[in-house]
Image 1: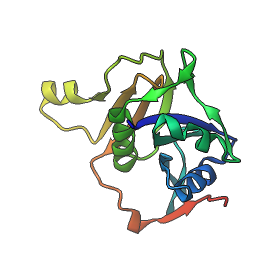
Image 2: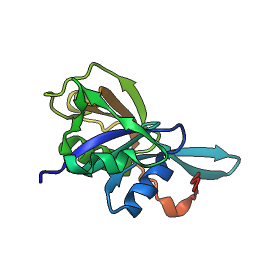
Image 3: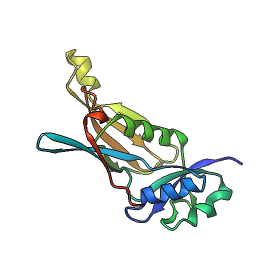
Length: 173
């Protein structure tokens, strides 16, 4: 049986709980977390919160759809044209790459295009080519056409190491 990625709608603030339950049922799932840098005085903390509120991605075959619906915190699948929406594997991989590479990611809604291609754009490339000087902050965008979102992030030249900061997670289990 062929497996696909599907988007699952969960109860509010229950993304991690639903992902934990599904992984205990041996269902591969992905809950993308956005790392937000919070400054308080001299200290910096990284707060992790779901990038897509009330969304979890699952990699399952069609025969496993009822198992996912049985989870207490799962409301339903996201549907497109009367069927559970199949999310391209490239989009899930790019979301994973994006959340692991950038901090303070912002989402913008766009039109859903199930046949669209994923694009990652460095918005300061033109500035770099014309002036020959590398800007300190680069804007990065990634288009997710089948989900109807564009992710935006600022990429500093300085790499933020998680070991320098306290990581704060709000896990409700």
